[in-house]
Length: 609
Image 1 (spheres, rainbow, N blue to C red):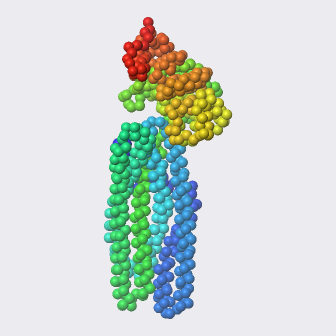
Image 2: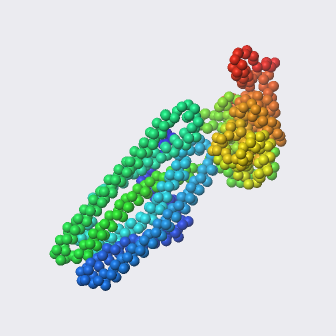
Image 3: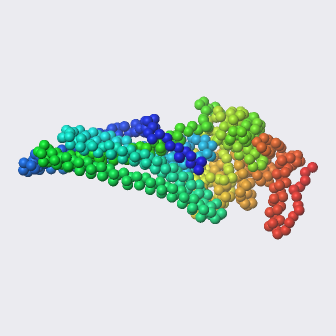
């Protein structure tokens, strides 16, 4: 459960710093908010008029048989109700409009910030947690802006007005009504404490569900392949039940709180009738005042219960805002230079100079690596798993920064180059090609406006991808499912090569780009590579040594250090690490061949002297 530790950290119930930061999102809409607050005050004032009109109607007109006066009071009462209706509609619409605009702005801000974060952040934070920030947590803040912040002013104004009106009508009867307030205060305090924990529990459960769903839907093929549906169902049922229990606990407190508040309100009405009725019998109080007090009492307890609910909205918003702002305050470790060095023409010469790097302190991945790749040279990087091959790519593209040494392109430290320029001159083709939902053309062009359709068609034809694209119903306009699941591994990799051709990089990086394709597709890719690699600097990482024998140079990495360097034949003659890797792969291929033929073979890789 350590992945969800952040979800379970409970901050202060109310943080003025967070509250001020939240209110800053209202600033662009200050005029709308001001109008909304003004309308809310008018509505609150109109709510005080009804009981006063009732008191006047009873004591001055009904009691004296004044029908004309009663008609005027009824007309005024109706006018107040109609005006209150239109004002409430306008105020509600304006605040909900404002809340939706703030949600829109905040989600854009979060998404824009996410795109600037370094790759390491996503390695350490579950995707489901990040999705929760931009969806559920923002929804909570919308509730705060639409039904919390501004409405609190209305409730406070109504309470103040009712207290003043009751004291003005009869201060003794008002004190009788207020005698139940200590009981109400105790009930509200207990409710706040109990519901605070249940709200936070709900937020934690939602984040857990989102993270679980994202991981398991993405890996559904593995779940089905290893027949783990029942176990995953049980795990989801456990998380779903925890979410259910958290909500039921919150519902229980609400179901208990509102009847208690209603009971206290009814108790106050009973006291008013008891005391006020006695005063009427003694002719020290009029019936109209008593009826007005009963109406005010009913309206007095409603904003109190509303304030309790809005307090919990505020608590929930504090929790969500703390998490959102923690994300927004996370600074990307990869910062663009304040004064980037521009280069008019990049030749593509790469130099790793005394490069050292580690992901975790005390566990070096690269140690004092020195490697120079000339412009237009094709260099292959091989080595055991975990030797640091892919880390070289991450450092070259500045997904991470070196802890020691420097990486130079045409003599310029990549940390001093503009990030966009650096990544535009480099194309990386990975083993696991990522395709977006959309058309084939969009996945090749990647929505780059300066790449036209003719260039996309030429790129697809150049890498032999047009052979399967033309067989599809709509050609380049054919739809690609999420992550390219509707295409084979080989087809996805051909599209990745077409993408690289269309963007015409000066430096091409291939990370296990042909390790998962069939022989026929590999032949197509090799044919495309022969054309693609011309006049480009290439850094090729491969496990299948048969695919790199024609490279200008092969570099062998082991335990974060360069152990060997040379051509294919030179490294075999050296009989070092590369020779052992080659022997192992050759024997493995022979074993597969023997298995396919139903027999055994004792052949071994050719000897080099």
